[in-house]
Amino acid sequence: MNYWLVKSEPFKYSWEKFNKEGRTFWDGVRNYQARNNLRDMKEGDLVLFYHSNEGKAVVGIAKVVKESYQDPTTDDKNWVVVDLSPVESLKRPVTLEEIKADERLKDISLVRQGRLSVMPLKANEFDRIIELAG
DNA sequence: GCCAACGTTGGC
DNA sequence: GCCAACGTTGGC
Image 1 (tube, protein in one colour):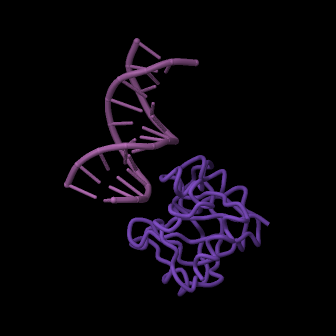
Image 2 (cartoon, helix red, strand yellow):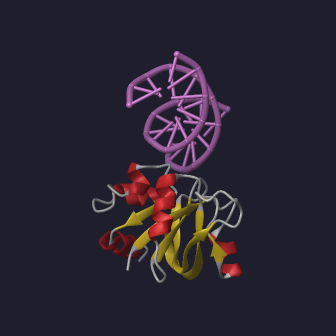
């Protein structure tokens, strides 16, 4: 079991919309590092859902329901998607500010490599974010 | 709206 | 294969 974090701008695809739809394929990744992370996702892995730009907080937990396959929105073989379904909302969003301020989280990719949109998390980092949500 | 970070592209 | 120019992302 691995843990991940994905970013989405609420303006484009919000946690609320994701919950209404119940399932989505995670498209739009056009960065090799992010793509490699998508490829490494396995069914059942847990994924934190982060709202970038607006909100700037981790808002919920999703899980991988289908491993990576060709991105249906392009013929370019370089790009893949995974299918995700929502698991639950966090009791309280955990903001970027809190994550940066946390001794155990200040080194995660979300902070260190701001532009990466799909990143791995260690189990203890995942747990810590859930813990911060109360 | 600005700018820093950083990935990608293309000329040499 | 290097590196400058350019584009994109995302925090502020």
